[in-house]
Amino acid sequence: TDYSQSLDEGTSLLCIYGFFSTVKPLEPFLIPFLTGPDKNLTTEQVYYFIILLFQYYCLYNMYIFFSFFSKLEVIY
Image (tube, rainbow, N blue to C red; front, side, top):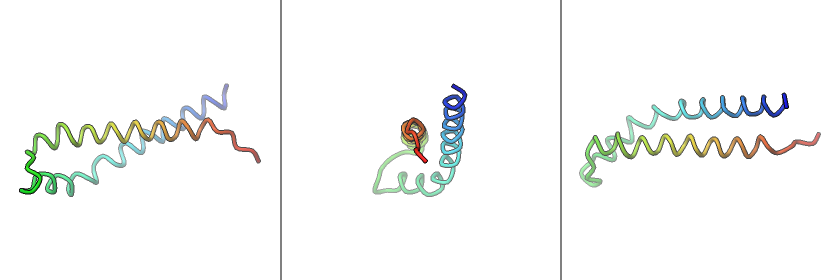
């Protein structure tokens, strides 16, 4: 049980790190692109719907990814 608990803690830490490391770098490039004349979105729509959903989607994907690979047993 110690091994599975340490894997769960490690998976959680990796998910938290991945979430916070991908939150800010996209904003300076994505917001001007989406609020440009060809996309026709407001700044409020981009902040409250697109970026918020994207962040939660990334967090969910990282959790699934690391949970799946932490359950695999590595044979040496």
